[in-house]
Image 1 (cartoon, helix red, strand yellow):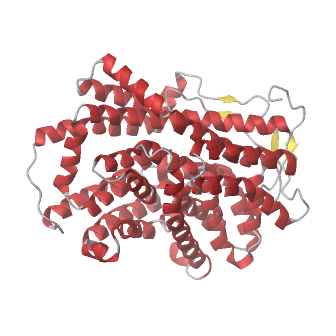
Image 2 (cartoon, helix red, strand yellow):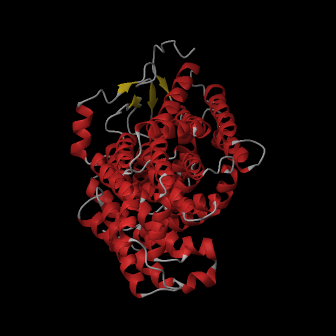
Length: 536
């Protein structure tokens, strides 16, 4: 039972069936169940997630031998994380969005974007890529997908397309998301220098920052119509990639996305004043535009301030930000070859209710509502309606996170990771895909780095490959898995109202994710053996 106390720590087993191949195939079963059901039309996302959770628990307890109490506690820990902080972010972002819709300001905001360009291809890049990267850098954890998907559907993009393109665009910025959180976590588990990790990722991702705007429009409009707007796409990509490189290499991971996104938005807007691939736009009321953007400006300022270390530390001092999960904290032990010496896994639930990004968004939404002239009764009614509508999505997110936590604490994902580690000279390629797999499983580049960062360093040292390169590759490869992780797909479908279309969204983005991850793997392979000194 979940309430029983485990007396002694349990040590993870990485070959429970005595055969690497059989153990790997068994470890794949929860993923196969989840993705198979999501990709079919026979089951809603929440039930597919619960079925995947059942499979993950069964494999952990029966095949791997994890005590049932530990497995159930891990599932409960993951489910709670799905509600807070992830669900808390989604709930409050969509609350603000609904207020702007109800007040008629969202329609004005659409017109203001159309004033920059009426071209849907460039609206897509400006919002999903450039503007979304700002929210990734400031907040992360689902915020950029929720915001940009809502903006795109408000501009007239169909719900599924808004979801798909927001997911594809939210790739290159992810490694530096939430003010550098993924790399800070990676440094914590590997002991490598944070500046070195930031610089290496800065030598990996900018190439893809130039590619993504082209890839995005190509997926939306095809080759011919992409060629028509290539100058604007190049401006958007280069004006993001160059600051991304410079800040990551010469400053550190904290402000990379914020600075790069602001440069990209400004450069693209200025460029489109002189170069237009379509008809010029009509003049609009600048005062109305200012009012329409005010709630989102408030959101931007508050979220950015909320994410700074000084503000977070102050807010955490006003509350009890975290506590150890009873019966799970340090009761699971990771061993070699994943870590050099046995290490007990922490299980801390960070209930940082004041400093959480979702709380900052809630405050911004309340301030925005008052600025828009909404009464307290209106805001309460809108919030309650929004919460009721999101119940299936919150259930799905909780179940997805429960799967990720069960696989992490049971060692299921490590079994899969060790299979990648047996690829020898091709490890730089497959190690990059390991980061991709980690994000696809956990929904977080941070979690993937915590999960596989140590394994990357150990394996790199065994094979004579630069450990900084492979630790960074875990994060850079992971960003390409962000578009197919179940959490992001559910956030996108909830933000656009495309409930029940999660399987369709997954099918639409899956091969984009595989292709981009493979390209990143090839780039890391080149860095490992052919051009390592060029990126020192």
